[in-house]
Structure formats: C-alpha cells, structure tokens
Length: 208
Image (cartoon, rainbow, N blue to C red):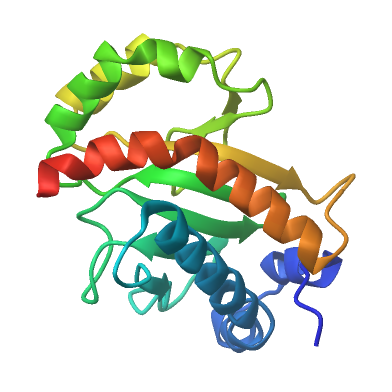
C-alpha cells in the first residue's frame, strides 16, 4: 500500500450521512493519519532527542452523532490521555485542503502565557516563509496567509479571549495538489515541523 492522499479522501466530506461517512473515514483516512502521525512523532523525537516518540492521537469524533464531518485530523503531542491541553502538531484534511499545523486550540493550559510569549517574539513569525498559513478556528475551513494576518491582533485575542485559537503551518489544496508520493509528503511534513519546533519548544517550557 502506498500512503498518499488522493481525490477520494477529499471527496469523503461530500458523503451524506454520518453512518456512511464515518466508516469510510476510518478505512481510508485514519490509516494515513497513523502512518504520517508516526512519521512526524519519530521525526520530532530525533530532532529534539526525546526519550520516546510523542503520542499520536487520531480523532475519533465520538461526540458527533448526527451531522457529517467537515474535517478530521490526528494530533501529535500531549500525553497518552490526550492532546487538547497542550501545544501539538496536527495533520488534518477537509474537502478543500490537507494541512500540517502547530496548534493551540480548545483553551490550552498556559494560553495567556504562550500568547504573551508570542507577542514578545513576533519577529520570529514575521520572518517565516511566505507560504505559511494561519487557521484561527479549527472548527472552520477559513484560513489566511501569514502575509495578510494581523499577528499582533491574533496574539492579543489569544491572550484575552478564552475561546481563541491559533494554528499555523502549511496547507496543500485539493485543487492543484502537488504532493504525489510518500516521499513528497514526508519532506513537506518534516520541513513544516522543523520550522515550528523552536516555537513548540518555547511553548512547552511552561509545562515543565
């Protein structure tokens, strides 16, 4: 089996009925998440010289009972019980794009401290490559280029608004999809993770 995302995976978000859609996501998308989630986890372990790989959590969507999924993801980070309290990396897909993001969602611990840290280190974000993308709300598909984002406003909101979120990384659109092989995906994932590891490490210091 070659582990690549194809048009078939993107089109699963057009399937009607959660009872029909969810088994297809489990069989088509989640094996890809486990494969690339493990790759990212082991890559981070090597880069940071960690004793163990980071946990990989494939979203189960157990609270969803009626409406179809608009997106699904796996998270790399946190602890064995979960990831939402922690900064973590996310690989996700919806009907429009695939993404790899450093994620701060669901009112993480130390959210205010991390927001203040990022405000004081805003130059590090401003010097990122032009193809970097920000997702301000993980429940929606909307995103914006880092070239257009008001980082000061985003970090101020992250500090002051409990429900605020911040995800930053790269997207790969369904249309004009450039990644064609497992090696392409691994290079894309590793490149993006490496660019955000310094920010991840700084944020994780609050958890020590």
